[in-house]
Amino acid sequence: MKIYLPGIQPAPSQKYIKLNSNENPYPPSPRVKEVLQKLNYEELRIYPDPDSLEIRKKLSRLYGYAEDQIICGNGSDDLLNIIIRTFASPGEAIGFYVPTFPLYKVLGTIHGVQNEAIQVAEPYDQPPDPPAQVRVFFLANPNSPIGFAYAIPLIRSLVEKVQGVFVVDEAYAEFATANALELVREFANVLVVRTVSKSYSLAGVRLGYAIGSRELIQEMFKVKDPFNVTRLTQAVVSAALDDQEYFRKNIAQIVATRDWFTKEAKGLGYRIISSQGNFIFPQPPQKGKGNRFFQSLFDRKILTRHYDEEGLRDGVRMSIGSPKDMEITLQVMKDVLKVL
Ligand SMILES: Cc1ncc(COP(=O)(O)O)c(C=O)c1O
Image 1 (cartoon, protein in one colour):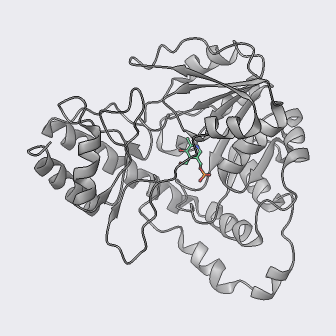
Image 2: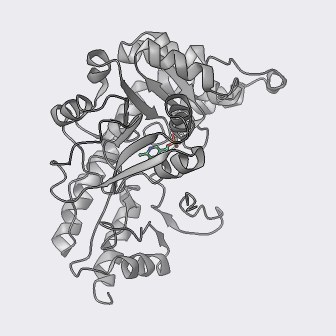
């Protein structure tokens, strides 16, 4: 079985520009620091709220869905796992377009389901129909690792073709101009999955959530681990959600850096499909150079990701870092063009 390989996580003493895990370059809201400083460590001997109710209440107010339409998990990875275990039995099929987030396939294999991987290619806005008989269909939107986003009317038409559960994995939706939340109101089989890892700079505490019909969420509650979100995580995320002003500024800065960097890198001759996430997928002008490009950046202390897969071999996935890190990266990308 092919395992899921997370991006390299170097020790802090190793001075890399780390653009390989789509993390947020900025710290979380200062309210997170406050809550950590005030935390009563004695309370850690007590189990956390199994229902993550405080967070679900805040998400309910933010998005206009009832608390019982929301479930929290130990990162959205946990929710993807719960979704497969809840809605697909071993031997049944799940589906997804490829290239995409590699974890769907790994989780499917672990759970003994059949993976229906449907290859898509440019133009990405005309994907083939998803197979109607799958129990679960995963759509990462914006897509990773390329960053393009499917338009909401297109997603609506895809949902209509799937009888099973249709999951829109919105790990990057906060960086995009549109999202699929309204589809939860229109369809009983749609689940939208989100995370605080990227948009709230909280990859280190692990919290994801899913929003869907009461029926779907109720079934997922039966399957999740009883205490799947730690006491620390609940306190930290609750504080971060309260600081929407910080959140909005953080997102706006990353989007501005992404759009500036994309323009500059294109000016150097790199090919970049417009991204709606906090990452881009630059491809050097000559085809087949993705791995060399990755290696050249790595040798110059810039970490990105290269995937040896159909549709991905020509480029690397690169997270959007701080303006300073991206300026250095741009200069390096200019230099490496001569050696590729
Ligand atoms: C498309 C997609 N979904 C889900 C995740 C998992 O995020 P989390 O940190 O919430 O587990 C990622 C992480 O990179 C991702 O790219």
